[in-house]
Image (cartoon, rainbow, N blue to C red; front, side, top):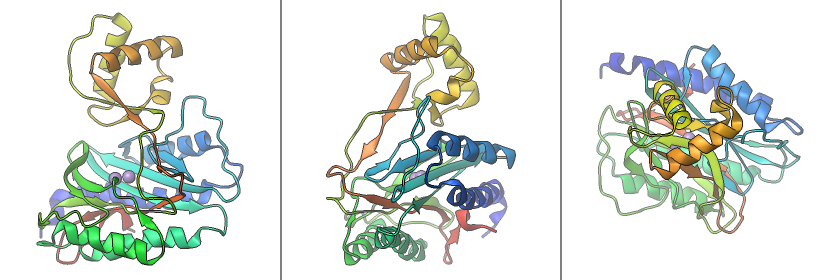
Amino acid sequence: MDLEKYKLQIEAGRIASWIRDYARNIVKVDASLLECTELIEGKIQEMGAKIAFPNDMSINSMAAHYSALLNDTTKFQENDLIKVDIGVHIQGHVVDTALTVNLGNNNKELVKASEDALNEAIKLATPGRKLKEIGEVINNTIENAGFASIKNLSGHGIGHYIIHTKPTVPNFNNNDNTELYEGQVIAIEPFASTGVGLVTEGKPSEIYALLVKKQVRDQTARKVLSFIEKEYNTLPFAKRWLAKHFNTLQLQLALNNLEREGIIKQYAQLPEKSKGLVSQSEHTILVLDKPRVLTLEE
Ligand code: MN
Ligand code: MN
């Protein structure tokens, strides 16, 4: 296997791996969620890469898609369970990785369950492996630990400037017989929960992504749109990023306008349906006979 064409993704993975350790060190009781987010996003750029999506810090029963809001005042508290989800890219070569920071001693088993599920699943990221087998080992590992695997969240393929593409890498046996192939890049991301194991759509996240490129009449909306196209292309972006370049009120009107026109979409926060606690572990993996974990590079 010639790894030359994965060079930039391997480099992005090395940076993401470093950032994951950095996140573990700065996320502490009383630290500000917004400040930690900006530190992480700043570090990614200092290291010579770009942010593939707004850094997520989803706390306790919030499973995913909580990114610092504009003027977010959240501070981490004792016993918080924080899913830090990190996206890094170099020239569109994306990697996606997540860890759970545990600010207490109560939920060690829950965190271990998603980590163990990920480690077991990685062993199966080999050519010819059926997707359902990966889902099965994830679900079994988490259930055997006494928790529920979140079934309506899943891993995914990664494409050039695309974070989520085929295939869906399930967190349970979904009967998908599709086989992995050599050279494919996938993210595997088990979530373990003390709840029923489902997420539901919550509040708007202030994370958006461009859907289609088309004309808008409103002048401010047009300016915001051309900024989005230039800076983020099709990758997700945060309202708080744009607020550094535009007047807040005008920005909100422009975003509402673009959303109404179907030009951008806003993601919803994803809380666990029964308010159960949630842990997550994620790596980006190159499918090979000996799978290579791109987000665990030295
Ligand atoms: Mn992720
Ligand atoms: Mn992912």
